[in-house]
Image (tube, rainbow, N blue to C red):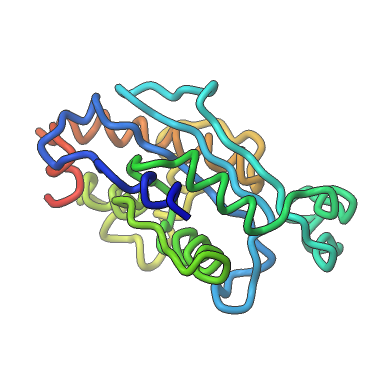
Length: 210
């Protein structure tokens, strides 16, 4: 249990420059969209520091699910039952992710859902939750744009991941896998950080609080 306490110590201070912060962009693929009843089947993540994505600093696990891998799961995630049966246990997957993320700032598209899914797993097995600072790319895009897309968002879904990827000219690749979506979201976050810098956002505190 002590390793989880250490993972959350010495979190980045708000005054630190953004180029000094390690961001972990992550995604969970799940059996559905209900954090209470559905389960995590894979976790993917990649780190970003100094405005650069570090593909060597990445993370991916499949979670063993003997009851998942039906036709719908294959269609959405490209995962077969034999893939999921060969995965690692849910508690081990959560443990590895916490160790990988450490005290980094977590980033995800519609982050509330992914955080809720991970916290449910951590609470069930360890009685803990994630204490990292969290950024949501959809919310950050709305904050930075404040233009026609922002005004139309409630009608046209302009802040869905696919819409944002198209708008920021990011080529779709390996969509609907945890690792693939994490990498796509990292590319989006990279562009949003550039826009943030142009808007005068220089520190972690600026990014989290403005």
